[in-house]
Length: 360
Image (tube, rainbow, N blue to C red; front, side):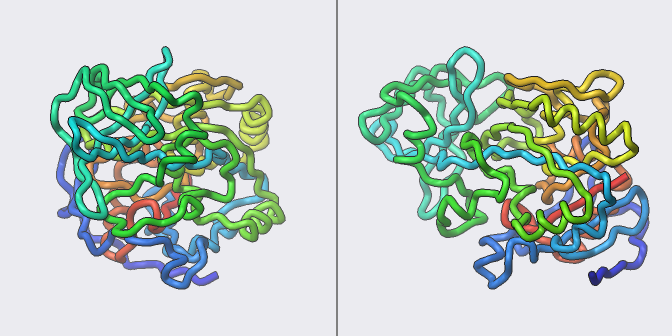
């Protein structure tokens, strides 16, 4: 393993703005425009920044991950698989893109409308409450009302869609945004752990894992255990709260988390989705229980984590709500050190980008 320690960063200054959520300028050059495989790399060849409190962050490759974990540590992974949740439709006779986000209690769905613009899409802002979007194969989505506390999601019902996942597999395509200029097959948006289709966008923290890396982790004595949280769209703006998402924490996973803590090991969440699911079923003492349904838990420094010791994640956009979760896990100073280091060292952002490991 080869790691590079950088010099201690300068005192707190730009690019960070003061405020509740970390804010900075993300240069377009740091957006990952394609999977690493398109650049002749393997999935685990992406870069990994390791943060331990206020220590100087360590630069490594994702394939070095086992060296930063101890026997007896437990990785909790999200086994939700990605579905092709972008549908072509027509609204008022004009083309429209429908991003099917997530099912909510009561049989309704959250959808986002996007304006097709060349190979990509842009935010759609018109008030279309009460209108209908026609979809492939005679289906349709009725837009009932804007979702609470959101400026872009719609509460909706579908007609002519007996089962959503099979319909999306027949007619949908993977959701992508302007930073990815060309389409990639659904396989590019799957993780090695994905077994249960249901996520509108990839639980991307797990993307760099390979079967070979999993084998090395297990051989080192690091445990891996599953849960499910079906993710919705990731296009919310910084001041929009996360919405409800479906989750399931199996009894065996709850037991392994509790046993790991009892034995002095660390529980490391692979992705913010895992943090949200585990904290939903954790009691005040940090003990995890089996459970499932919809979670509306929002993790912030005012709602500290109880079940998770560390987090492996990607790099989040300025003012993203996930940055508050990272701050709850690691603290504001740690977060600022890491993001300054990542920006200075040209780490890549978004679903095909580099990774960040936060450890106590």
